[in-house]
Amino acid sequence: MIEKYFVADGEFSIDGIRLPDLLAVDATPCYVYSARVIKDKYRTLREHLPGFEIFYSFKANPNLAISRTLLDLGANADVSSLGELKGAFKVGFRPENVLFVGPGKTEEELYYAIANGVFAVIVESSYELRLVDEIAGKLKKHANVMLRINTLEAPTAPEIMSGGPSKFGIDEETVVAEVRAIELRHSTLSGIHVYSASQVLDPAFISQHLTYVAELALRLSGEIGFELKCIDFGGGFGVPYAAGEAELDLAGISSAAKAAQQMVLAAFPNCRLALEVGRFLVAEAGIFLTKVTRIKPSRGKTFIITDAGMNHFTRPAFMHVNHSVKLLNKMADKDAGRFDICGPICTPLDVSGVDVALPPPQIDDIVGFFNAGAYGYTMSMVNFMSLGWPSEIMVDGGRAFVIRKARRADDLFENQNQK
Image 1 (cartoon, rainbow, N blue to C red):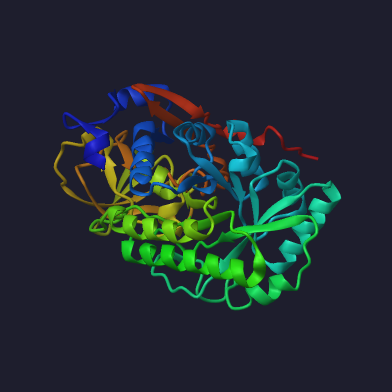
Image 2 (image 1 turned 90 degrees about the vertical axis):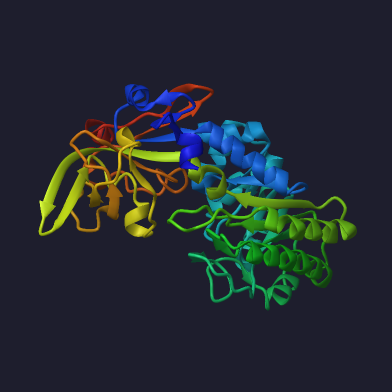
């Protein structure tokens, strides 16, 4: 991925834009995204999974320019908050192509979603099912509802949402009794949703999951008594971060996807088949850039200290993800040692890379953390130590432009009162 999209003639380059030209657009720290990668990932997904609708998961990266890129490609929207929902509408996603997910939706969020006619509110408890029906009645609207199911699956992945006690979804073994006990007057059950795990790289599990969910949806529609209008199979498609991890083999799941599709459509020909995908589409498109400010030897180790760390790129410190790291201005140079990369934050947790092989570093070198397009900016604690916020830059069609302005230190206190 790095060599294919981010190297030209031995130098760092994105669609013909080289490092000095990127840094002329805005200074470090910043996130840079390749629209070409996003487009290629989306088309690859569509090629291997025809018949499934791709719902872009806003939580991965809600930047409006990225979301608009995916809308233009044909994606729908998967949102989990009022802010994400308003962002989806602002970009231009149509309400009938929006799914609203999340275990703790507020009444304000539900009022807004139902009033604006999202395709379905995905409820995660019997309490929420009653609440949606009540709110729809007050609004004199009719709401589509899908049931999130906490299945009995046992996925192997870094982040697991099903299989045991969970805040996500209604337990598979109790859902029939719970839902049958509720009289719906202003809403209609239209499908189910199952999201079992995130960052899944095992095509065998995904194939098994697709079959499991299709069979479960058909069974529940019969036992509870509702017409299947949509099945959200979740997603969780992973990307390789650490050395040795292979890319997800989409070809390896395509036959199971086709079989699940045929199984459902034989009974419900008009049922929508949804996949919610975020990381897979945008992670590899993004790079986090930060500048070397100090090189510090200490007791046999050498630390590279940069102008941003866990405040602007939290994942390595809190999620313990080993992102590929390069000195972007020395892509062709040979590695000469191993270094720990740290930011300026006053905690020992602020470590972005451990024992990283790099060429000899110098002050003002540019460090690039790859696969940073998902859960990078959006997950980071940008207010920590009041160092400002990074900018976000898009490269599209040989042009680089800011898609979110940086906020400098002085900007952070504009809306605060001293008394």
